[in-house]
Amino acid sequence: MFDNLTNRLSNSFKILQGKNKLSEGNIKDAIRQVRRALLEADVALDVIKVFLDQVQIKALGLKVGEGLSPSQAFIKLVEEELTKIIGVANESLDLKTQPPAVVMVAGLQGAGKTTSIAKLALFLKEREKKKVLLVSADVYRPAAIDQLQILSEQVGVDFFPSSINDKPEQIVLNAKKHAQKQFHDVLLVDTAGRLHIDEQMMSEIKVLQQTVKPIETLFVVDSMTGQDAAHTAKSFADALPLTGVILTKTDGDARGGAALSVRHITGKPIKFLGVGEKIDALEPFHPDRLVSRLLGMGDVLSLVEEISRKVDHKKTAKSAKKMAKGQFDLADMRDQLLQMEQMGGMESLMDKLPGMGQIPDSVKNQVMGGEQTKQMVAIINSMTPKERTHIKLIKGSRKARIAKGSGTNVQSVNKLIKQFEKMQKQMKKMGGTKMKKMMAKMSKMQESGQAPAGMPDLSKITGGLSGMGGGNKFPF
Image (cartoon, rainbow, N blue to C red; front, side, top):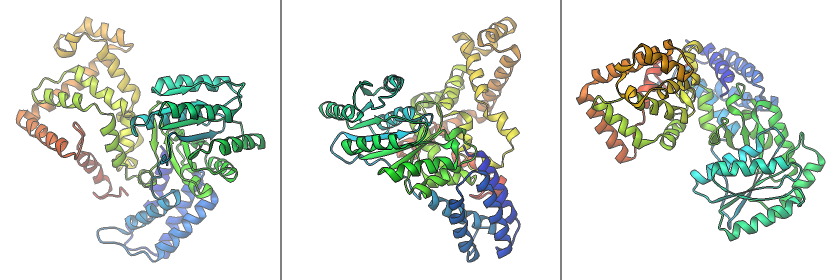
């Protein structure tokens, strides 16, 4: 996410490396480089001006704190000012009203509006424990109604049927009555999309908004359109009492211009980020965490939350016990790989770890291949249960059969077997006593609520990376 901007900002800060103090000259040089990075990221010009004016004013009187170098003090200032520009803190949905809380969602065609509604429904169902009802008020596209119904089944929430022959406001009023009778907590309303914001669209959505009186009105915009996303959202916010923005397709956006521009231009908060194609790929927007990632400091808080939510802790604890007894097999390895995929793969995990910006792409590509993980899982799935537990059985003819069944080749099967054997050797080196101590520590942490079972020791992971940046929070 926003890789280009992260890399360019990293290069901007290098100009201060090795400086004993901050001077007007080197501050101006650094700010010039940051300006260039933001322009290339397609951040809106007025946002860049406001942000850099504040940085320059504060940097000239900046006192370098104890334990920080001048470059780190400057990065800390950039971090604080960027966070202010994009919203300071997370702003969650306001659902404090007599149920059902009506949330109206609007957006242009192609921005990912209908999919975002389904993702939001799943988020509210799983994380907020809400009973959700979906309804489509898009009377122009029958396919939009069908799509929302299919998605509602996919995420396991209720759907209120509608027809292109009905008026949008009547559809929603009927859905609201149904939601009251069935004790739904939230009613999510999909509205008609357009190729652009026009007079007809705004007059229709105004009537709908005034009739239904939603507690939240969210606008969905495509991150890939850069600062245009912010200006589109502003046009909508000028006409309607918009309460927030959902920024989609951020996983494919290397620039980040929309994320840095929307709040300042519209005055409305980004409430959610669409971070992938999967139906659960929606994250609450935390400005401080995003800025931390942009500056190469990682986002360990989000990583811990994700592990807590997505890792099967019983399965992980069972695997750890098998490791302690030296009984870890290829089926356990497959489970670990699948859990990693559940969290978005190694790429998603590494994106949230500090110092990743300093690792060369060639090294990242060796570690982070999602296709490689799928290939390994396919190879293990092509083995018999006995082969997964008794790796020594896998010889010539068996390897050929496994390669054919997984759509790979014998070399790939050999590579997997070698990797697994290396893992086994490492476990043996750790020895039973060490493993038992680790298990005891994990159990204690689980009981005290410090970390979920099976969660990796992030201090060890980040500690190994921090050496690349002098062993402190900032990797520059």
